[in-house]
Image 1 (cartoon, one colour):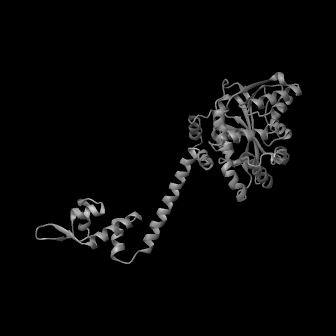
Image 2 (cartoon, rainbow, N blue to C red):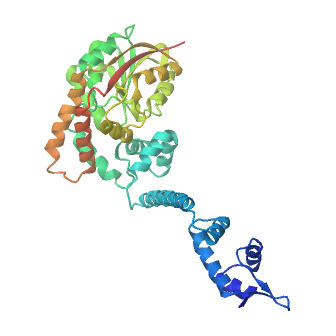
Image 3 (cartoon, helix red, strand yellow):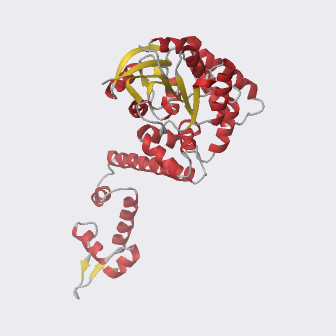
Length: 390
């Protein structure tokens, strides 16, 4: 027999708790003539069993039900599912913490954060010590803080040998330029890359062109191309981020952005770049869009991670209108524009496979080429010609 203080010590509970347990009928003490409460070994074992049931997530009431009657299987199955869910969540939390400490892959987290809170995600990356250029690249390319430097070195090794860094063609550029209802005099090209579209614009207008990119090697190649074409005298380069353009507002009658707006988010680009346009200015941009309502699961899953903001042309048009634009024209880029990018990129991947078999960047680019080639037509690039509305 045990006095209440002895029983409390045996099970690690307070005297007050045991008195409450007795009140609700979990244990049954026997009061002696001297007023002491005494408890049997049966009470001790019952308390230990209750503690084990509580460790499984059961409430006191549910513990009592399990002890006094047949086990409620439905109740236990519900508790088991809850526990499994909690364990899964804790495992995800552990994986994230381990990844942030350099012991795992942060790609899944960056993908989800980039989708649900893109601006806050970018700001957080910058606070971790990445400059804006590095943060944007990490957000859209490597998505792994701990392997970013090697990933980007491999990525640039692939692309430095290529002039075209996204789908496009001279014919599509000229078609979009033809939809601009005036002769532009002052063009800002945002994300000019290595200058393929820049040269086309310079050769087919008399405009002064400001070419902006945050990659110095791309700007150097763009000027080399422009010099060879004899149009370099009308081109000025600016090495800066598209999210913080250090240029006077309202001075450009045409902004051109082929395949670059996705870096900061198309909806953000529509809003932020509008102030750079003059009163009757036009914005021309291209963006990847879904071309079908139900794309193949393989391409859908891939692009959900690579471009979580991907949507349809119709949604982009509504976003443009909401941001203060009127749609002058829009059209889907040609298959030639698609092949002009993915064919040489696929050849470059094949060329490097032997020397870079373990490269995460190369393997992801290889997967992209295969999927985008196989499912062309379900996803494509769309050009939008948008006039600044008054």
